[in-house]
Every structure is written in structure tokens, then in C-alpha cells.
Length: 327
Image (cartoon, rainbow, N blue to C red; front, side, top):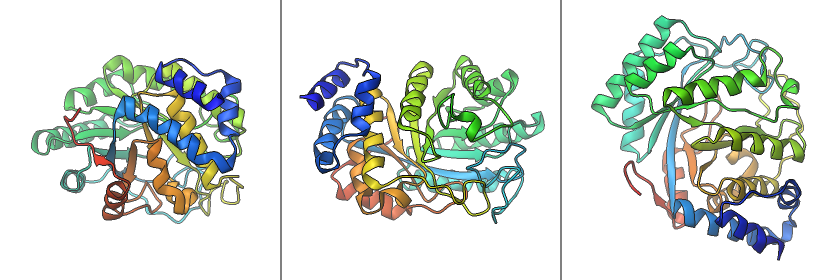
């Protein structure tokens, strides 16, 4: 009865109570297929039987001034990663072509650092304009804090979407970052929304947060109303403060979080993002019953599922690849 009530509320876009959210996360492991089936019924009604495949690439790596404890690119990270300034137009352009040729609906670019010079934004805007004119793929950029003028410039150049994650709940945020505040992230998202940019905003699960923190983050995301919600699962990277972090994650727990996201955001794009390969392991394909979006070809500084493997997983599960312009 509980599961049917949850599904019906989601199908009617009604809000779950906090207690109902807790019960979803604590749903019996032996009944996980029932939970996934309910999530799929909601998924199918609002976003169909398709999967959005997206290609994510770092276009500026490392040397960030912030102390985000999970991040290998932060100022306090000793992780052995490649560090480089903004990549040249040719390389950014070629990766966009690869994304388009491999059925990706969106090419996602990530830039380390919290603030950027106007010169850097000008170079990025020129790359965006060239890609939109020649390739025509949807573009998202994962950015730090923008000025209103910079956001407008990127929007005019053709940028469709900005990624800026909340990462965790407001209360738990000081445990993962001290160099800027949660409120600054929310303000930056609002600035981008006011410019007309779509918003991609989600979080990282497994940083030591409680079930209540996850639910609080979801409730805070409901206030933001992003277009897509990427859910990452922490990979403790050697050289970061979280390298020995006990994530408390297992495949069934991760699936429950994805199901909860679908019930709370029935008509949004839910992405099984970074760390899904690491934590979902053999149950990874089941994520598609709740999530309708994935990254392929790796993440910012960690490897992931290859493009052929990702496309094959979608095909094997009986889903269709969503292409730009499709309903």
C-alpha cells in the first residue's frame, strides 16, 4: 500500500512527506525490484522510455582556489591529476564532434576554478559560438561563480545550460567545503536562471551525510527547480581529504536514492552520474529504471563507462537513445 501511494503521488506531481522520503531510502532490500518498477512507471509517464546520453569533458583542470574536500582539483588536493589552462578551440570543438557522432544529446564542458577573467569567458564564448554554428549540439558548461555580464555573454554565444551542483544539504555543506558558502551556490544558480540559461544541479552521495541530509538537499533542489538533476556517488580519490572516506554506499542504497529522486522530481531529467560504475557495479543497468540520463566516456578526473559500453547498456535494457529535438 505504501509503495502504491508513493507512486500515485508522484504520478500526480504531489510532494512526498519527509517521513515518506525516509521510508523510500529504508525500503527493504529484498523488494528493490518492486521499488524500481514503481519508479519506472513514473519515469515512463513523464520522460518516456528514452535515455539521454551525454559526453562530459574537462576543458580547464586543476589549480582551483577552493577547498572542496571531495575534489581532486581543489587547492588542498594532492591528487596526481593533469592540470592545464583552458583548452584551445580545436580540442573543445573536436570533442563536441565526437559527442554528436556518438548519439550524445549534449556536450558538457567543465572548468575548474571559482571565478574567471572576462578574457577567459570571451575565449569560452567563441568556442561555444563555433560549436553551435557548425555542429549544433546542445551545450552545458560546469562553472564556478559568474558575473551577470559573463552569464549574458555565454547565453548570447549559444550556451544552453549551466551545471552548478548544491552537492549536499545546507546544514552539511560546511563539512565538505569552507572557502565558500552554500548560499553563494544558490545565488549563482539564480543569476544563471535570470539570464535564461537552463540549470543542471544535483549532488554527491556518500560524503558522510545522513539520509536526512539527502532528503533536505532534494527539498532544496525543488525550490531551485533545475531542468536536470545529476546524482554523483563519491569516489574517494587518493590525495584528497576524502581519500579514506567511508561512503557507506552499496548498489541497493544507490538505487533507492535514484528512485527517491524520481518520485520527488517525476518530470525532471535524473542522471546517474559520476561513480555509478564504481558503486552500482553489476546492478548498474537497473539505474535506468529510475534515471533517464547518463554520462559516457568518463568524468572530470576519473574513468567511467566507455561510449560503446554505455550505448550497449541502453540497448540491452530495451531503452531508446534520446536525440535532440525528439519528444
